[in-house]
Every structure is written in structure tokens, then in C-alpha cells.
Image 1: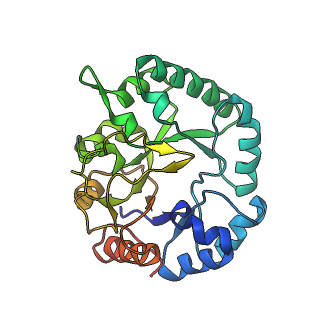
Image 2: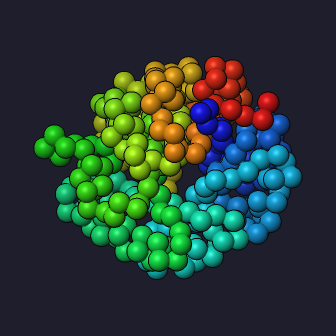
Image 3: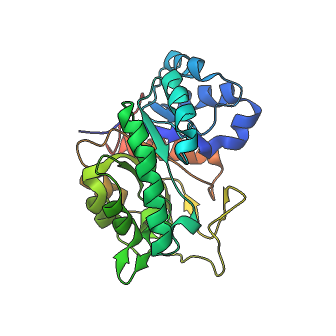
Length: 269
């Protein structure tokens, strides 16, 4: 079944900070069926879903709230309630996957968050970046981590970052984690470009730019093969461009057209 297409609003964070309503209207005009917030700016959570519904869009996930430890689980559940969601996202930084001890600590933290969320009827899903797909003695850090967390924790696989700068096959990575994957993030770029010398990944909460990102269909990510390998239970494909070599709005329009006109996702137009 063809999946609905959405956009992660982190892609347009600068414009969102200036006029969030204008951003939502423009996303709707392109034809995206779904949005995935990363901050609500001046809009109250309880109003957000009504606004996007009135624009002909919906939401199956959000990166607001983002749960980081048991200390903000309660607040995260409250925000999710107001958004009309029963799933909450988590994710980690480079230091949490730098070695086996760090991975174990991250897994223990995830388990604690999951237990509280699950007890209250919420699903916990996790978003990845490149560093979870580093290898330790030949084994993927994310596989080691997966063995340490409850089976109920789900994944939102970012297919591009799962290549770890071209070192891994994204189709194989999706197959490895597919049985617990509920959502996909899709970006494109030059997968073969390696991590820049001395790159720290994230600094001050923003991604460094050691690799070229491009509109979907114009890079080297095998998107048709990924769509073909997508499990039936995956709910949506969400476009996320952390940054882009092409002007962002043009990139989002190009990405939408590529996915819908090639039958890789379904939109509103």
C-alpha cells in the first residue's frame, strides 16, 4: 500500500520562527498530507491539530514533545494528549553511542521511559541519526542497543542517516529494523561522502554540514528500493531536510513531486 507523505517541520524552522501559520499554509499548498512538528512556536498544542486539519493535513507523530528521561515523561504525555497523539519520540546524541558503556546507559534510560509510557498507554518510538549505525567489533551499535531495550520500543528509521555516511546499505538497514519500524524519515544527498575530519555531528543542538543534502530523487539514496522494502505496518514517509544545497521550499516541492509522481507516496494533490 502506498504510504502518505508528510514533512518534518524542522526543515523550515527558520521561517516557522517568523510566521508559523504561513509555513503551515504553504506546506498544505504543496500537497503534503501530514506534518511532523518540531516546535509549536506561538500555537498552543490543543489548537495545532485543528489548524492543520482545517488546512487538509493531519499528524501521526511529532518531535514535540521529545522525551529525554523519566523526568519529562509526564510533561510529554500531557503535550501528546493535547496534540491527540498516543506516541512519543526519543533520541540520543553522539556521546550516547560512542562506546558500549554509553550504549548500555542509553538503553537503561530508554527502558525506564518506556515502562512509564507503556503503563500509561503510550507508544515510545526512536529517531536515529548517523552515529547509531557505527560498528563495534563488526556489530552495529543500534543492533546492540536494540537487544537491550524492550521489544515494545518502536523505530522511526531515517533512511539516509542509516547509511552512516555511505558505509551501510540503507535497504539492508531498513530490513534489519523493519519489524519494529512505524515511520520513515526520508532525505537524499550524496551518501558516499564520508564524515568530515574532526566532525562532532551535533554542536549547540544543530547539525554540522559535512555531507551534501539534496531534494529527494536527486541524490544517491535508493529511494524506490527503500519504498519497496517498507513494511506494510509503516504508517508514513516523512520528508526531512536538515539543510539543503537547494533553496528549502523548492527542495520540498521537488521532493513532493518526485515521491507522488513516481508512485512512491501519496499526497493531497
